[in-house]
Length: 95
Image 1 (cartoon, rainbow, N blue to C red):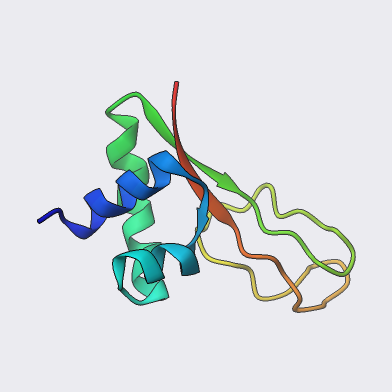
Image 2 (tube, one colour):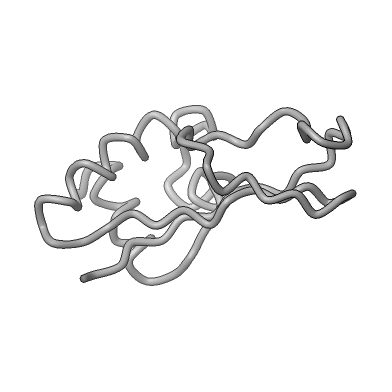
């Protein structure tokens, strides 16, 4: 049986996924996914791979959270103050 992080790495090497999709695939809470992503980012760096994050975007004004360092979804847009934000997606790529 593989560990949760190894399962997540396997999934993210195959396709781009949101935290919700990952949580459903490995059967853990969405909050736990964010904790594991930080460790996975460091782990794959040592294997000449990179955890790529497609940033969240405001669905109202189109603002992209490209400089955000956290793995979680932002609460609201800093420009229009609306809470309709898309979820970030994650993918592991080789370089």
